[in-house]
Length: 183
Image 1 (tube, rainbow, N blue to C red):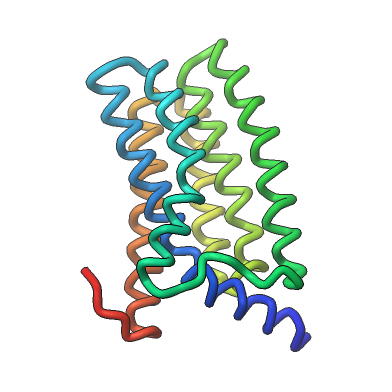
Image 2: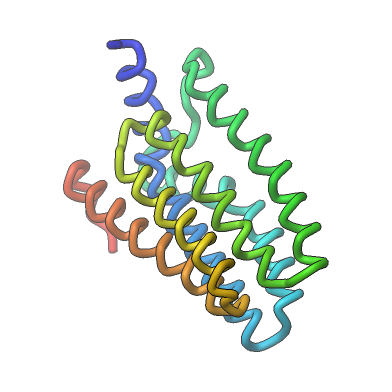
């Protein structure tokens, strides 16, 4: 049991508890929503798709600015879980893109399901049960948006809101634990 705690501590130390990725993801969702409003929903799909590819590199940069390494120990077995979850997510995103050919809003609703499911594994990566809350909220929002047949823009802003609210909670929690002064 002690080994998992050490592995989680290493992940938390390297990535500041993962909060940077949640906030950056929330902002990408928000910008995707603005893209849907000011351009087209199809362009919003591609913004979220390509913007999503920037989440990890931007969060690494943000973590380094905070003084974290942005890299876990190579011997950390949780690193494999993180990579396996990423591969699974990428495969599912391909499915979401195919769904978008049927109905644009299905892409965003599927993305909430995919990303929410991925966050469920973050509880194991970081040892923080709030990731279960984040994952469950996104999954519930994805299903609800689908069954209520919500427009794409509404679905996008729901996803953005959930990630930003939980991300800000993580940020406040990180600040109080680390005594880092920023924002």
